[in-house]
Image (cartoon, rainbow, N blue to C red; front, top):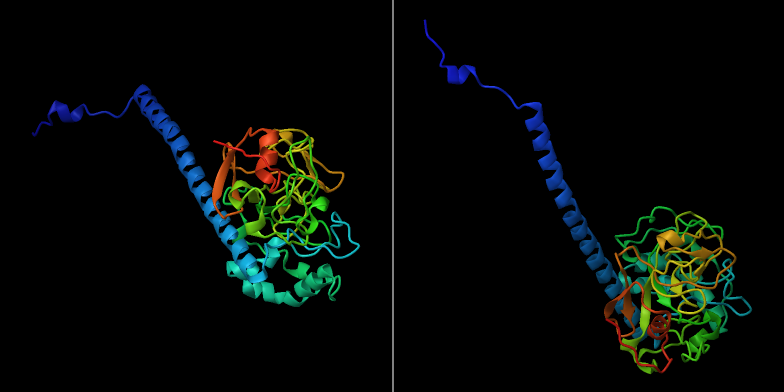
Length: 332
């Protein structure tokens, strides 16, 4: 008879305590790894977003070269109020489509776009709103990788509007006071509040009084949480939607501010706890917002890309977004 050595017969599995210890060690390792993975993802999204914004800056410069001026924030026909969501014209994102390799999309409604463009210039055309047939097109070029609400389309003004995260800077003051590149208002003695992309355009890079490297051309914005909140919609020209304006003044304090009601957008939701404060009574204010931790990204007038921290003071944010305040600013 062959005897099996006792060393083989006494093998046993893990005890419950040993198994729990192993599980605890694995859980600790996963807990240490997840924040690092999240940081890598955030960094990748931020880099991708900055690259997209850089390309939009280049496209605006290409438009400038072809048209002897930067694209308008949006077009506005004679007698139309700048907050009239049903009758405003195409915005800067629509007009630069041929410069971001989207000429086919532009051509689908080029006749309508040009009709409104001529009407805004007072040289014929008319209030042709067929250009809005393209506003439901999801545009990767206009969407930040960190945007959490990109699939919730806006539903005002009789359309479903695809989301977007990049906004032409109309200046920190009243957008109606900077039409065709006008000087704008003077708030708090901080200097005039000229924009870079203004209603009906007219701004030239080499004539920006404070210098193209010292003023924001394109800000970052966030999409609204519900369809009625039109914030972050690439083709809709209103503040906080595809433009910024009246920011760094009043109850709009700075990038990613957490104040109540700091944007003014018809149909919006007030969510200050998520840095999305808003008053729904009409269009008027819109500041820069992003889901990049602790900062917003912006394209300056010269096409360079910069990041600005949350907590940037209201006065400094005013200077950063005004093209003609006459003040020198520095920011870390």
